[in-house]
Image 1: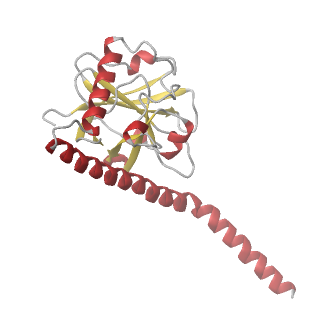
Image 2: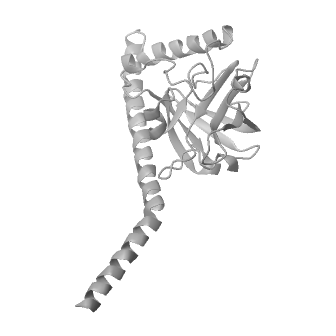
Image 3: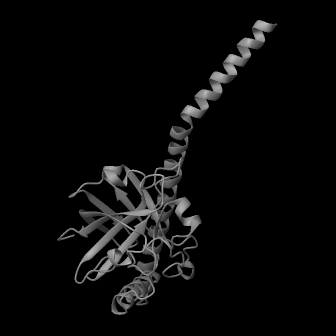
Length: 241
């Protein structure tokens, strides 16, 4: 009986150790599946919007896609014109730049980003709330909405230190010249990495719109596992895209 108990205890400890060892891998795979599902739902919804838009076009009516794009473009022009006066700590703003609920988008997912070097594809939500940051990446309010164009800089934040989710954990692997893409409701935009910086949280001037440029800035905490710096990766629109 003692031998059997000892065997059971050894087997139990082995299983517990194996579970602890495999937890990060298993949880990451589960998270990858959930992220893919979010993106698939987005693409399905986008297809529905485009079918509706084609119907509206035949009836010579403005579509939801037209209205949403015009509102986003106006927002980008407004913050550029006003010098992004309401921007503070580049990781602080949680309020969404605009509310997409009236367009039928309850979760405020506006696009998704693909980063081949990091082997990730993440949904992009409006507003860096705790909930959004748990689900994927977030566009920081008072920065440009992700539709591209001159005088824009879309700042996209994601966590690095989540045990069960990679998110931007490997942002430091990005190199100059690496490409990323952002797919929104209208098209896919291509950018390449042009500069990498480490800044302090208060250095908001480092994420401002730059005259005439079409930028995406990726931002996360630095160093890994800490929160007293910001790791920035500047990406510029690829010509002809």
